[in-house]
Image (cartoon, rainbow, N blue to C red; front, top):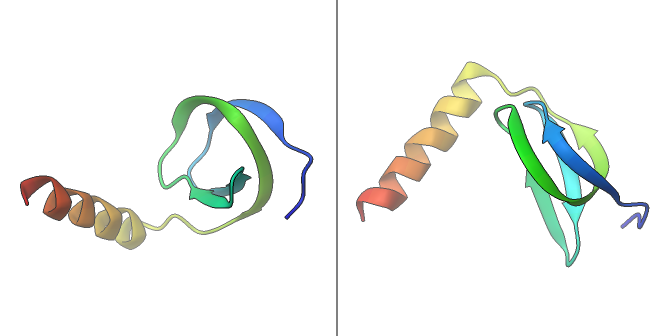
Amino acid sequence: MPSDSETVTSEKAGEVYYSDPNRIVLFYRDAEITGEYTRIGTFDATDDFVAAVEEKQNDNISK
């Protein structure tokens, strides 16, 4: 993976980053963050995608 990480403080939905050690981070909503990330791409954060992620989060919380 690329090693040109930079400090990121905010992100838009649809951004994809690499974070050491060996993590891929997908932002499905705009976010205020702080961390060292390497941008590796984007994806289309559609309403269906966001709904699926949030539904899965709710399933995990209720268990």
